[in-house]
Image (tube, rainbow, N blue to C red; front, side, top):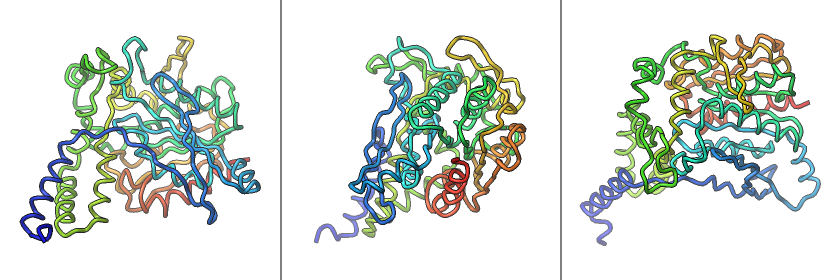
Amino acid sequence: MLGQNPLTKNLSAGYELLHRLGKDYKKPEFNIDSVDIDGVNVVIHEHVEMDKVFCRLLSFERYMNSVPTLIRLKSQPVVLVVAPLSGHYATLLRDTVKTLVQDHQVFITDWKNARLIPIEDGEFHLDDYVNYVQEFVRHLQGEYGNCHVVSVCQPTVPVLAAVSLMASRGETTPLSMTMMGGPIDARKSPTSVNEFATSKSYDWFENNVIYRVPANCEGAGRRVYPGFLQHTGFVAMNPNSHAQHHVDYFKDLVKGDDVGAQAHRDFYDEYNAVLDMDADFYLDTIKVVFQEYSLAKGTWEVRGVNGKSERVRPQDITTTAVFSVEGELDDITGAGQTTAVHTMCSGIPEALHQHLEVKEAGHYGIFSGHRWHEQTYPALKSFILSHST
């Protein structure tokens, strides 16, 4: 048969690889239609809980016929997953959500592509991110009772700020906050990401990586840090690894390994889908998190929705349990950057502090894949459950 000809196989595989390297990757969907809970198939309905200008708060509602089981599911802990706004869409945490939803009522921040937001809708700063998190927490507290917050990578910083500000005002703070692989104190064990951010001036970033959205987009004229530049940066951190992945994909296509080839497609459909970030948010993050270390130094002032600035004081948190998670082989967030949260949160009793180092896990391995399932999630599930009353 023609399809079995070695030359034809190689040509076909080569064209497929070239197509995937050059195609435009659209925003992925979560596509979590159902999960198995205690041997029962439970239907999942994705619902927009709140719709803000720059972010949607999504819920993953669970449905089944058994009334007793439904009652039990409704009594499970409420978890707000704060997804990164650092290039990829919230669907990068699909595996995280699909696992959490088996034992929790799950909500996630679904950040919007700034390229699609009209310029008249205003700017979006790091302070606004902090204010969004506070609003989402208050909403969940009001509708479902108190909640737990899980932040992955970049949002560990604004989440800690949000909870700190709520504590300083005397508001009810979340039952727990989990910080996974985040640059809470980026001075510790700096990685290539940290070194790049400190090797250039703030003005350099503003003049060299910020662009205006073109006229043919909904956000025409908005200043953004474009997704294509972010993707270039992602690949540049591990070029040899990505090259080998593509070589392996080519080999899988040639030998007809459909499982291996599909695994590659699934990963890169997600990895290559990137969004534009509002320029003000990106530049604020460079300055506050990676250049001035404002949170770690205790100098960060956040502007609230009322226009007034407040000092971020993690030491004011007293009742929220804190769990830090780091990957042993994380080359994006260095060792100690996340565990710094424990020293900053000096007002939290020692019994409410917990840390996990995920063995042999890189950055993505702490929230996705077999190390997430085997090491991180069992510890996280137990932590949340132990602080749910």
